[in-house]
Length: 332
Image (tube, rainbow, N blue to C red; front, side):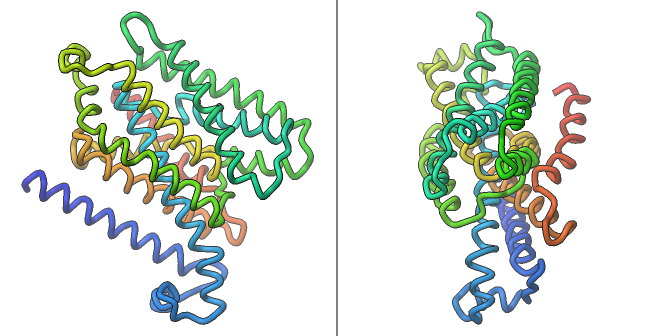
């Protein structure tokens, strides 16, 4: 099959998979809704109860999982591209832990009004992610450039230290705050209302146009540094800009959906296997795969344990941990 036709077919199949997950997610649960009733309600022809359940509870949660999954997968893809490290992932390199640590600091020292929580939380999450990413990059860099394996080891070590510090700090929390942090660590989708949908959508709308303008630069950065320099690309500046965007995407997503690892690792790898490493084809597939993975994990978690549900982060970890070991075994 011609490469372009194959890529379009892959995109179409993934869109069908996402639509199937959306239909299942919207129609199952404590309040059952037939697929036809869901479609009618979606277009404003449902009764009052169906409309309330769909638009006030299920729709915002689904959109949050789709958008956060896309953001996490894109963040992982960018980190893998600029570091040339196929094991790079926002969770593995410590960005998730850094974001969580700063969120814990915010809860302890700066109690925020619930009306402003949706705006303040992502800012602190991004700050923690940026600082952690900067420390990891500094500790794993030398005159020869970034050391991929040292970056993973540094990220895992820093992530463990920050997670331990965050758990230690929870001893000073009241019961409600401890419960929130525990759910956050488990990857529980807690920000499932429309303001959070708007927040993560705004982050994607700001970052995606910039990234799509840099797809050719990302392709060149994946080659030898001499080629990038010869073509007049400022490697350090471009890496810095793309790294900041990757941290923004990851930190804003984890501030809403908790500490979810492996989405940024799995989705880019599968996308490369499906359409190859060229970023013009690879990035859209990565976005779709991230959305599919997280929305599927959240839907499955709700079905396995009703009504409380199993955190999506645990479902993703059950899938992602063996895949990570498989990649390590292959020596990637």
